[in-house]
Amino acid sequence: MKRGKKYQEAAKLIDRTKQYEIPEAVGLVKKASTAKFDETVEAHIRLGVDGRHADQQIRGAVVLPNGTGKEVKVLVFAKGEKVDEALAAGADYAGGDELIPRIQNEGWLDFDVVVATPDMMGVVGRLGRVLGPKGLMPNPKAGTVTMDVTKAINDIKAGKVEYRLDKANIVHVPVGKVSFSEEQLVQNVEALLDAITKAKPSAAKGQYYRSVSISSTMGPGVKVSTVKYA
Image: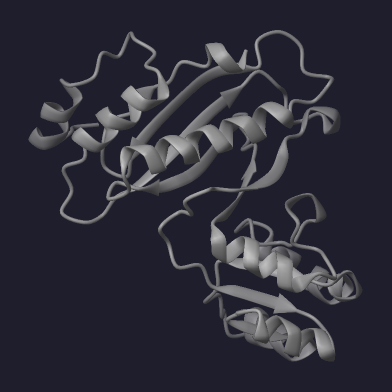
């Protein structure tokens, strides 16, 4: 893949053979960001587990101390008073069965996170083929299947992010924007790694963190040292 001149110049700032401490890695990501827009900073974490086995699956959520810098739209599936509670708590959309045809037939997907009360999961299950591949299905482990819709919405709006293994056993999570201060990004990266360290399955053997890198949307990756999490 041919890279532009700006990318190649930015890549010269980084020693590909070195693992940097988090503050230094964050500083390099900010320096190597050359896009004209406020790039997202992402963490890419390769883990020494096999997600094909249920006892080695890793999935959960963490509230980043400084949020992600992104405006998140929340859809809540609920009934009766819980619909009013969700809207009062700041949900962008809330409702029940009447939302199904909009999503199924009209392709309406103007939301980033879906929350559901447990009694609505039968209804939401009908949207599995649409929401599943997009990673939008509510899940108890991520705190998005709950009767406490107010807390769920507050956490999401405050910067709660989900993490889960992909097919290559890598977790990809946004940890902020290039415009964040170095301290804000460091705190977010540390909160994410703390959460993933705690989520280590007992069935995981050998080295847990195979590699961790952070990068901006258009910038080169910077490897992060995980010695303190080993």
